[in-house]
Amino acid sequence: MAIKFEQVNFEYPSFDGTNFSALKDINLEIAEKGEFITLIGETGSGKSTLVQHMNALIRPTTGSVTIYGIKIEKDTKKKGKVKLNPLRQRVGLVFQFPEYQLFEETVLKDIIFGPKNFGVKESVAIERAKQVIKHVGLDEEYLKRSPFNLSGGEKKRVSIAGILAMEPDILVLDEPTSGLDPKGRDDLLKLFMGIHNDLNKTVIIITHDMNTVYKYASRVLVMNEGHLVYDGLPQELFSKENIKSWNLDIPDIITITRQLEDKLDVNFDSQPHTIQELFELVKEVI
Amino acid sequence: MNIIEIKDLSFSYQDEVDALSNVTLSVKKGEWVSVLGHNGSGKSTLSKLIIGLLKADSGEIKVDGVILNEESVHDIRRKIGIVFQNPDNQFVGVTVEDDIAFGMENLCFEQSDIVDKIKEYAEKVSMSEYLKKEPHALSGGQKQRVAIAGILAMKTDIIIFDEATSMLDPKGRESIMNYIKEINKAGVTVITITHDMKEAVLSDRIIILKEGRVIACGDTNDILNDKETLNSSNLELLLPLKLQYLLDEANLSNDKVKDILWQLSLNK
Image 1: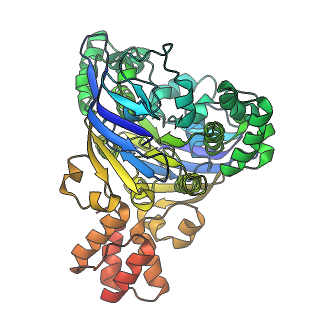
Image 2: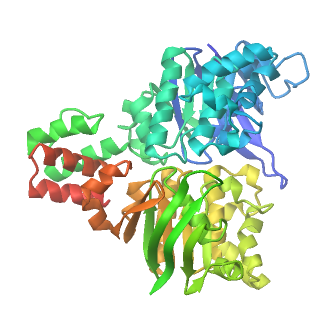
Image 3: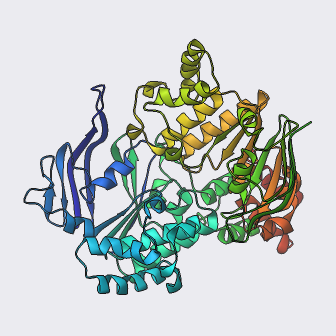
C-alpha cells in the first residue's frame, strides 16, 4: 500500500480560538499502481486538506498517514529524522491553478526546477523535460518559450510537466480542469488517462464535474463535512439515495436518461454511458 | 434603451493575433445576456475592456451613454461590478466582513450602512457564519461567494460574472445562478461570461464568440435552433440537443419527442 490514512483528524487553527475541524476520522488506502481515482464533495468538505496529507504538506492533528512506509504524525518534525523530500518526490501534488506558480524565464527552466531541487543532475533533468513536454501534448519547441506568453491551458500543461519531471509514482491533481472549456477539459483528462495507462501510475483527481467521474474514474471517494462517506465504484454511487444530501450532481447522461424515461413513460434496460447509446435506446421506443 | 453599446472593438495582446476583432454588440438595460465561447474565444478580454482594465486598439465602448476613456473610466466603474473566475485573485480583505466592505468603502458608503449591508449580503450568499474568518480558512467556492456578496452590496447597475461559477460545486453554482435571476428581476443588467451552455440558456439573449469574433447573437430560443452555428462554435452542446440532432439525422424525430427534448434543453 502506497498511502494509508489511519484515524486521521485535522483541525485548522484560527485566531479566534474556534478551530475548524476539516478532516474527521479518515481511514483510507491508496495503491501505488493502477488506480484512477476521483475525489469529490462540495466546497469546504475537506478534499484539498485530504490530498495535502498525501505528501505530508500538512500533518494530522491526530491519527497517522503512512506514505511509502514512513509514518507521518502530528509531531513528525520537518527537520527531524524523517526526510520528507523523498515522499514529495514520489507523490506529486499539482495544486489548483498551478499555472500561477510558473516563474522561470523559459518553460525548460520551469520544468527542471523541481527535479533539480530533488538532487537530479541538470543534464538528466533536461532529458526528462524533453520527454515530459511531449507527454503533456506540447512540442519540444515550447521548452524555449517564456511560460508567461502561453495560454491558460498551455500553462497548466507546463506546470503538470514540471511535476511529471520529478517522476512521481502517484500523481495527485487538485481540480486540474476547473475553468477549462469542455475541449480543454477532455484533452487534459485524456492526458491523465495516458499517464495512468502508459506510465502505470496511480492518478487522483479532485473534481466537481460528475461527467468526468462517470466517464473516467475506476474508484470514487466522496467527502462530506470532513468525513469520507463513500469509497467505491461510480456506477453504484449515482444510484444511491444519499447523493443529494452530499450535494453532488448527477452526470448529465444519467439525468437526461431519467427525464426521458419519465416523460416517455418507458424503462430502458440499461443506463447508457454516451449519447450514442442513449440514441440507440430511444430509437427503439419512438 | 441600451446600457452598453460596443462598436467595432478590436484588441490584441502585444504582437499576437487579435484577441477581439471588430466586435459590435449591445446590451439593453435590465437584460440578462450571456457571452458564450470556448477558452481563447476572447470573452474575458471583452469583459476586461468593458470595465477599462484593458484599452482597446480601436473601436468604442459606451456605458449608459458615456464613452469609455481615461476620464470616464472611474465613473463607469461605479456602474459596473465584476466577479472574476478565480476567487483568490479578488479576495482583498483580512476577513470575510472586510472583504465584503471593500467595494462599498471605495464607493464611500456610510459606515453604519456598510455594517448592515455586510450582514444582509453575507446572508444572501450563505456566509453569515464566516464573517470573522480569514481567507485561508475558506474554500475556493466560499471565497467566490464572498466576492459575489461584495459586488452585490455595491448595488451597481450592471454586473458582469466572468466565469464566476466555474470554480463552484453544483450547490454553490445553483445558488449563484439563483441570485443572478433575482438581481436581474430586480432590475440589474447582467452579463454572464461562460462556456457552459447550461448556464447560458437561462439568460434572455446569447452572444457567441469564436476566435475573437461574434458568430451569433440573438434570443436564446433562436440560438438553440441554429444547429449550424452551434456545431461550428466548438461549444459542448447540451445532451438533449445532441440527441435531437441524432434523431433528425436518422429521420426518426416526432413532435412529441422534439418538444420534450426542447423543454429539457431549456432546463425546464
